Image (cartoon, rainbow, N blue to C red; front, side, top):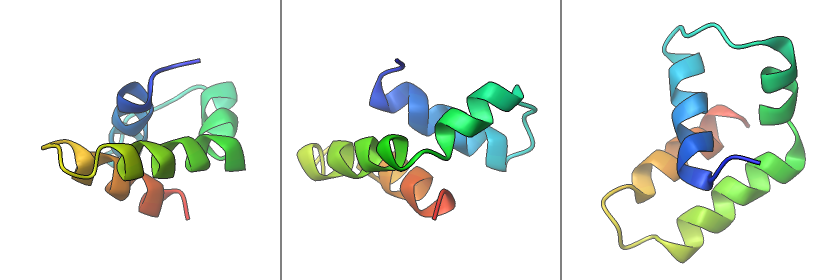
Length: 61
């Protein structure tokens, strides 16, 4: 399972036009994956990359 930062990068890449394999897209759209992004934001809300987590979470809404 990718780290939260990797997950956020996958989401923002996908939104930006990157083509991802169907199994990766299915994984990204799981509730558990979205919850991991939320948890990562909550735990690291004071870091420079917190917005990446929040943005990825919102994209998957």
